[in-house]
Length: 114
Image (tube, rainbow, N blue to C red; front, side, top):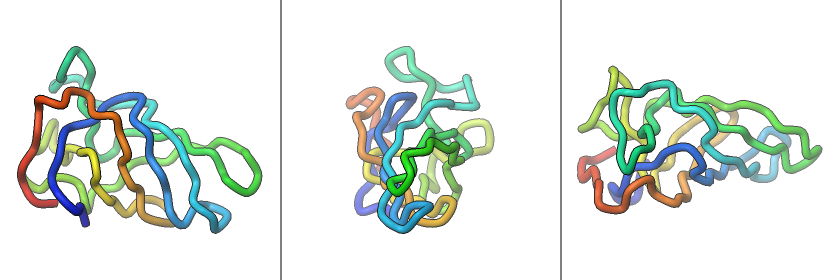
C-alpha cells in the first residue's frame, strides 16, 4: 500500500490514521520501538508492532495503536518484523496508518516493495 519505498523511521515520527477511532483522521507519533537490533543515527528503526500514541480527533483522548504488518516492507525484516518507512500506508486498528516523517536517517533507504 506504500506509494514508494523510502527512508526508515523511528521514535518521534508523525503518523496519521484515517479513518480514526471516531471517524475523522487521528494524528499521533511513534513512541515505542520494540526491537533494538537495528538502528540508524543511533535511533532504533520502527518495525511492524511498534507502538504509536494517537489522539482521538473527536474527544482528544490519547490511545495506543500498534503498527500493523501488511503495507510495511516486504524486503527488509528486523527481528522477524517488517521495517516501517516514510510514506508507508499500513492497515492498523480501525483504518490505514500513513507514516509522515521525519525519517530516522535520510541516508538509509529501503527500496523494496510494500
